[in-house]
Image 1 (tube, rainbow over the protein chains, first blue to last red):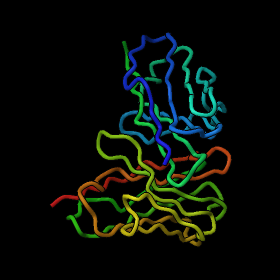
Image 2: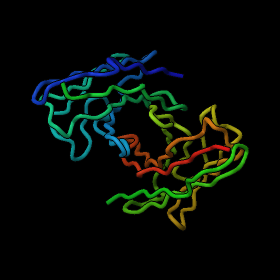
Image 3: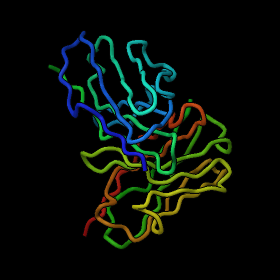
Image 4: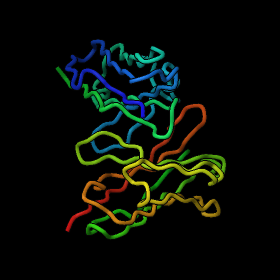
Length: 108
Length: 118
């Protein structure tokens, strides 16, 4: 089973600033990496798949990068609606499909 | 638009059974695989089970193998999760998720809460 590790657990950022979230896989997942956003009381929403492709309707301020075992989600200029928990997930080696433990982006 | 609506959650005693349903609309149901993903209160996401588009292949997390069964009824555009021998650690919100071969877990339902407690 591939273990996904996200850092940091919590990230405090001021509105308008850049946020950089990291995700590491215990072995290579090639580019089969997705990012999800979850707000309190809501279901997760797909942001990024294939490590860097934005899902339908996702604003351009969200970008993903990386390959192999190291990945990054960058939010270029945080808006109030971006404060949420973000999960990475690998879908290269399955089953199981595995998620990171999440990074909470909160207001500084 | 794609909609996934889960139902069937509730409070159940340990050792009992529950069946979740997920009614789908807005896409050709029989063309897609579907997953169940759960989230314990205040915790992260855990993949539970998947059925391929044709129902021929099904996979389960080790934590539920032998106790949970995933199935689908393409005539009703509905996904099911039969949960037997429930344990306290199965307490979670259960999400139904559409599986796209390109974009992966592209649509999620709103979830249904299962609470296992005596």
